[in-house]
Every structure is written in structure tokens, then in C-alpha cells.
Image 1 (cartoon, rainbow, N blue to C red):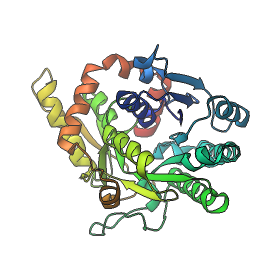
Image 2 (tube, helix red, strand yellow):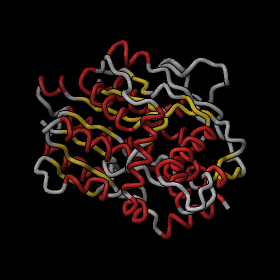
Image 3 (cartoon, rainbow, N blue to C red):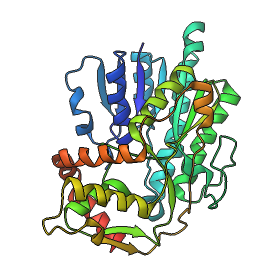
Length: 352
């Protein structure tokens, strides 16, 4: 019994691999292209673990994926591999098309071919679990009901459009070929190993460095925040008991505005790592020009996942953000290793 986990050195993928081995001894093969957001240091604690094998490669490399499937014969493929930063998709959408759409297509083709070679029992037990985002649903009005699994797709950025396309491909491979798929659409994740271009790790790093804390527009964009380790437990549960062909929304039941999130981080840092001058980190907040097509609100209704599979998040936003801030304070070497010269160049281009 083995899993093949793609995108396993990125933020959510790496957290899932670590979570998996904290709860199971079933072997896992990690496949990651190691683009700018993929970091083998995220998996350093698994070095020497005989149940974990890392492979450097692309989900679009059909020969490699076919070889891994034939050699390790996994009972499930969990696909985290994706380009995921909205700002980057606006500046350069082609990478998102290639990875999220074309890459997913090639992966599905390889998995379909492998699945077809399995015996009846293995074939029945096999799963392809695709990890997606709530951004495929578009933007919600302030008083609108949260996204359910029946909400129509209305993506508004090149990133969300590319993820919507990948979701549709996964669904089509089930309905056309019978491939036993599962899809999860999650809200905004946060927690350890988050690449510091995203809001929460960016704010923590900039605050400690005495730099501005950039907030788009008026800061009233609302997101539902999900602690990444809660997300991992949800994925394990969907893999274990999800109904083939179905989609499950995964949310944290924590709607917060961007300004509220940044303010909470500042208040936590004021307690955990006070400024030398005794003033609040809130004084570093700066409002910057809003990005094009910025969705105003996302909110996930995760009722189905709780009702059918018995899952609900363990962390509140307050407990999760406290753990997240503490992790970044305790892992400054990781942060600085990630923050390369190319990363600083991106920040300067984006926010100045």
C-alpha cells in the first residue's frame, strides 16, 4: 500500500506529507518540480525515513509519472501540484496554464492508463484525489450565503480560471472514463512552511524586519481562513471515506477581513516579540493600490464534510494564528533561506 503525492514540497503538500507520517506508516512517494515555492527543507524531518521517497520531477513528464506508477503501484494519487499565487498569475499567466491545466491533463492520462491495468479489487479501491481552491467559485456579496459544493464556477483571475479548468478535467475523467476521483475545494490556508509571498507569512516577516505591512485597497476583502493542519486532516478523511466522483468543500469557519488578519498578527507579535521601541507593529501597516479583479469575499460552507464524513476544524483562527506566529518566530533560518534575492525582487516589483 503506497501513496503518490504530487506537489509535496510546497506549502500544503509538505504539511500533508508530514501529517501523513505523523498518523500512518504507509509508504509515500513525493513528486515535486521544485519551482520557487517548492522547498526540500520543508521535508527535512523525513530524511532517513525508509517509508518516504522523494522524486524531483514534473507531473507533466509522462514518462517519469508512468515509471513511478508502474514501479510503486500506489493505491491513491493525491494531486497538490499547482501554481497558486494570484498576483503572479496576473503578471505571468502562462505558467499557471501549463502546470494547472496541461500538467493536470498529463497526470490524469498517466493515472487513467495505470488504473486500467489494475485487477478488480485494486481498481475498485484506487482513488485520485485532486486538491483545489474556493477561488473557482468567484466572489461573494457581503450578505450572500457561503459557497456550497453546488455553487457555480465563476473564476475571476488567471489562477482561479486555471484551477477551475483542472477541476473540470478531473470531473470529466470520472464521468467519461470511470476514473475514481475525489475533489476538495479549500479556503485560504495558513500555517508552517507558507512561502513568504502570501499575506500571513509576508506580514510576519516584514513586521520583524521593520518594513511596511502592505494591504491591498481598503483591506476589507474577506477570506475564510483554514489552518493547514486542519486541512490535512480533512484530506485524510476524504481519502478514507469520500464518495467517488464527489466534491467536498473544506473551510475553517473563520471569515476575516485582510485588515483584521494583519491587525491580529501585529497584536500577537506585540506580545511575543515586541518592537525595541515599545510601539505596536500596527504602525507599519500601509495601504497599497488594489490588484486587478480582486475578489471581495470568499466563504466556505463545510457542512457537507461534517455531516457526511464527521470532519470539522480543530483550530479557531485565534489559536491557529498564535501557533503560526510562534512557528515563524522559532524558524527564522527557514524564512531567511526561502527569502532569496529573486524573492526580494518580486516583492519590490509587486508592492513599490
